[in-house]
Length: 146
Ligand code: RB5
Image (cartoon, rainbow, N blue to C red; front, side):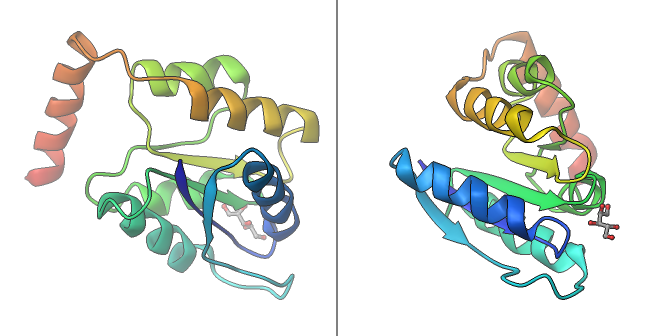
């Protein structure tokens, strides 16, 4: 899978860790920064990754900040993006099955390290169920188009 990934300073270390693991698993990872712990502003990174996903240059996006929340808010401003910040494995799975989430936001200061990998793995492996859920996503797309 082609995965675009980015973080702010608070998420930088976890991003490196997730990237290494994804590459070891055979994914093609596009690292869009940041690459230091110098303080930076997360919205620009959220938009870079989200646009790559919205344009089809990446299949999925992953964003990391301190809580996962700011990245999620910013990512969802990009048309076509359904970004989520699951707290646990169950939410991660359901965000794929029912919401076809295409960007995953992680909180480096909020999630236990072992939970992060479980969340990433199930989120990447789970498909969208379609059917009635597709109809609901169409309604969201209509809202976005207004
Ligand atoms: C940075 O201190 C922090 O605010 C940021 O990483 C993120 O958690 C914002 O939502």
